[in-house]
Amino acid sequence: MSGVCAGRVVVVTGAGRGLGRAHALAFAAEGARVVVNDVGAALDGSGGSGGPAGDVVEEIRAAGGEAVADGEDVADWGGAGRLVAHAVEEFGRLDVLVNNAGILRDRMLVSLDEAEWDAVLRVHLKGHAALLHHAAAYWRAQVKAGRPVDARVINTSSGAGLLGSVGQGSYSTAKAGILGLTLVAAAELARYRVTVNAIAPAARTRMTEAAFAEAMAVPDGGFDAMAPENVSPLVVWLGSAESAEVTGRVFEVDGGRIVVADGWRPGPSVDQGRRWSPGELGAVVPELLAKAAPPEPVYGS
Image 1 (cartoon, one colour):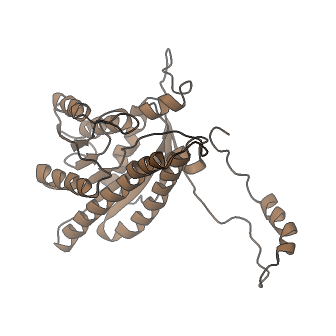
Image 2: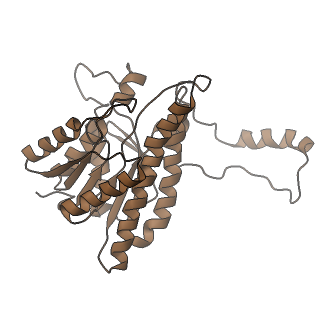
Image 3: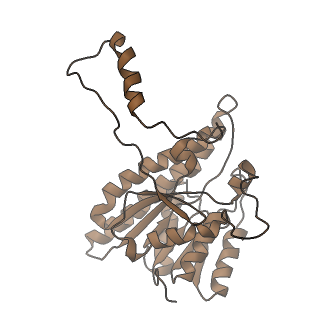
C-alpha cells in the first residue's frame, strides 16, 4: 500500500476502540503495518478481552492492510517489553510508537481513594514510560549496531493535563506527567534519530462520553467535530518521515483545529539582587501578577 507511512511499522496502544482504533485504521490506510494493542478492558480498567483488538485487525486486513493483535498490559514493565518485541518479531522492526491506552476513574479529591489514584497513574503514566523505555532501548541498540533509525513517538495527553479538570485529579496529574515525560524523551532520544511529540485531543471516546455527554453528542447533521477520526491525520503525519524536524512539541487537536500549545514559559519577573523578606513581597507579587497573562480556566470550574 502507498501513503505517507508506507512500510513503516507502528504500535498503537489502546487501539481496540475510540481514538486508538481510529489511529490504527488511519496508519494502515497510509501503508503502515500495525500492531493493534488492547487488553480489552472495561472503562475502569477491569476485565479483559482479545475481541476489540482482533476486530480492528480484521478491519485492516479486509481493507488490504497488514496488522496483528497484541493483548499485553502496557503498564506491566515486562509486558511493554514483550509488545515491542512482538512488533519486531512480526514485522522486522519498529518505527512508530503511539501511546494511547488509558482508563478513567473520576473522583473529587475528597472522595478519591488510593487504589483509584494508583490505577489511573499506572495505566496512563507508567504505561507511557514503560513503552518509551523498551522502544528507546531497541532504537539505541539499532543505532549502536549501525542500522538506520528514523523513529517517532506520539504520546497522548489531554486538555486536562494542560489546564486541569475538576473531578479528574488523578487523570489530570497523569496527563500532565505525560507532557513532562514527552519533553525529557524528546531531548534524550534525539541522538538516536527519534522524535517525541504529544497530542492533547478532544474527541468522542468511552472516557469523554461519560464525563462530557452533552458536548460529545453526535450531531444530527453536518461536520461531526468530536469524531475520533478527526484526530488521527495529525498522529499519522507525526509518525511519518515528513515530521523528522518536529520534536518536543504538544498539539491540541479536535475537529478541524490544530493548536500548538506553548507550555510554561517565564513571565514577568523582578530581581533585587538579595534575599527578599516576607514583608516586602506583599507589594511585589501582586505587581508581577498584574503584568502576567491571566491563567486559563480549569475545565469544569
